[in-house]
Length: 135
View (tube, helix red, strand yellow):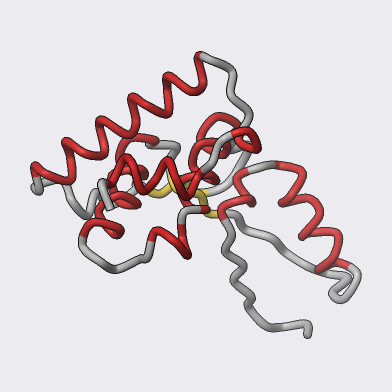
């Protein structure tokens, strides 16, 4: 495996322990492993807008992909970049008012859940997503 480039992508790699676990696993196969991390900035409102836009434009199905909202709820709170290149999050739906308004509403609802200290396991994510997106 040595001498090759590998790209690994997962939202949970924004959590340091998940990155370290991946590095340990890869090093079990490649002794002289060099790791270069690239991260998207922690831009919660833009990220959520992209998720909501994908749902509203039919690119993703809420029943199958509601986990993206659940992961967002958890991950944007614990996102820590310790080293590596920082990339801007592309705001795919910046000019679409309906998506911006819906995403802002959902972001505010998620913030309310946070203030209420709701654990992500205590939330019925498929139902919440259906309500918020009026599906």
